[in-house]
Amino acid sequence: MTEMWRTIAARLSDLGRRVSRLEHTEYGAGGGGTALTVEEQDGTPSVTDVGTIRVTNGTLTDEGGGVAKLDFGSAATDGSAIHDNVAEEIHAITEKETPADDDELLIEDSADDWAKKRVKMSSLPGGATYDNAYASPPDSPTEGELWLPSDAPYILRRGASAWNRYGPIMPLFPPCPAIASLTWVNQDGATATETNGELYMSHAKDSANELYLLVKALDHSDNYQITVAVQPDFVAQYHRVGIALRNDTDGKIHGTLLMCRGSYVQACAHKWNNATSWNNSYVERTIPIAPLFLRVRDDGTNRISYYSLDGVHFTEYHSVSRTDFVTPTQCGFLIAAENGTYPVAARFLSWKEESL
Image (cartoon, rainbow, N blue to C red):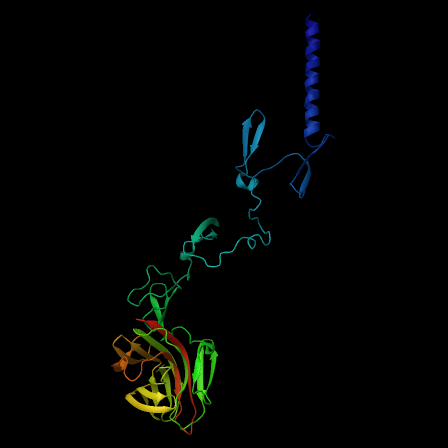
């Protein structure tokens, strides 16, 4: 009886060894059986005769009972993940054309072993431009940022600890209206061209006391002001450039303008019966230098003329009842030669018509 049990035990032991060899042969590497092949879903790359599969740290869990669990998180199913050195993946993502301050970027921090971090657009160096009034500096500026005060002739750049001023610069208003939107009055031989928002008007020498106008309908009937930046190109007596207010029915004109008197310049308010008929002067004030800005204002009571060197501080030089001589329905640009020796020209750099 004992011998029989010994024989049975020996046979069971041999069977166990055969099963063990079979498992190794069928599912492991080598041994002449079917080797394990590992490949990506599309078949490339593919690795054959695999004996060991290595996985990323943190993805393998021993579930017990001979079960191993692999967990690759979203990378296991996210086919739109960004991969190392694969061209055009970022380019394929939807573009946001106008970033906002609270938008965030993903970066690798060079000061922290290239750890991944997020950064707001507002925190990027040199990432903002401010237009605060000069008395209200921007809060918490970053070095390299720019500040163009709404009421001062400077551009300021933030240094390491303070704002550095550059300039002076002048606050030019919106560009001049397109010539196609304007109408000539008494064009005669006058010409006009436009380049990048600048309107250039000129006329050959002419001794007649006439105006050459480009006009449009007034946007407002009262309580408005018009401001232009103008660089006169005049050298001779009676050359004039400026702002015209005109009535399109009777043709009467009020001019807020600069006039050359040869060796000096005057800020003037003039009136004409029409573009070819002079009436009279309200005022001709001598000023030390030709200003860059002219302004005419209707405040609901009076029509007021101003000039300014910097576009911020305006000097009033004439005021009259808002309907004196003319009730305007049009506004625009004027030049006048009234000189038989030299031509006249002007560069109008900006035009702003606004309600008060």
